[in-house]
Length: 179
Image 1 (spheres, rainbow, N blue to C red):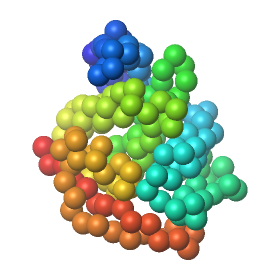
Image 2: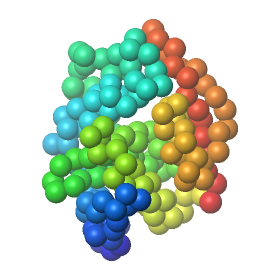
Image 3: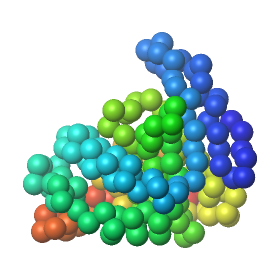
Image 4: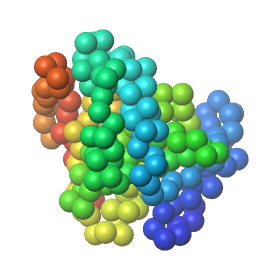
């Protein structure tokens, strides 16, 4: 792995063989730019609709990722949280942010690139950026679907929560990792 301007280039992923002997693709992590907003919305929408549907009802995922949504609101959100963007051969395959207080607001991997190391690359990048910024406590509101992934990286459940999104109640977890 190399670090340039605080952004990790995950070239070490290239040529690594996964558990099934499949070569993992090269994953690069870069800073978000305003032009990424629509791609991150599409990734968010399809991941929730295709992956999170395993743990939430159709009504819940439809409330979480509605068919109609004001992209200006999304643009403002992405501009504000400024996520890291994971790419494979120029295709955005994931994104995640790290706020100054250690909060991870968004962490999503493209539904067609699950199990390819995208989440691992993003989480390692978050930890590296956190170390550079002196962050000693990471925390996030984690879905049922992502709970085991976060646990794998040393996060512990602080509390189970019920959140309401567009009238639907969804269970998630406040998870914390102290380094």
